[in-house]
Length: 157
Image 1 (cartoon, rainbow, N blue to C red):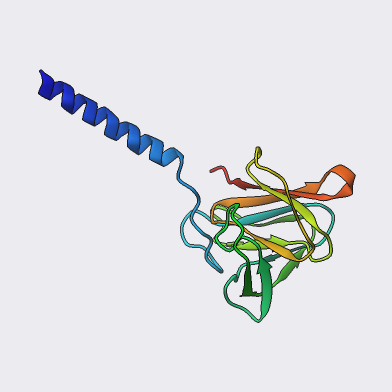
Image 2 (image 1 turned 45 degrees about the horizontal axis):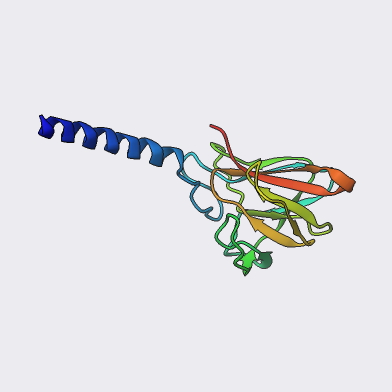
């Protein structure tokens, strides 16, 4: 009887661990250029201002001053080689597109950023880049005091 109970507990514990692990998996770190597979970084600009992004973080003829080299909320400054691209309102990259955005900034304006809808807001000076991971989207709009507010989210689907 104890043997069966032990197996049942082990089976349930293993199943629970697997299920829990699947629900808390973070998006993998972004890789420069085109992404392979399902997950690609993306940016959405709803500000009416010029946003800059890169798909070549770690290589390129210019530089991006990234505050979070590893993606996520930890500060780890990186003066990274990159090619800077500009865009107006719209979306670049995203899951299933094969086009991977690695980082973004606003070269002419400072902006607020946070990771997740309940994350803490942080101020970034003009030209400071925020790295995003594969499977994440940086959604930027205009908010309080006509300032730029960007929320980095894991993309649905």
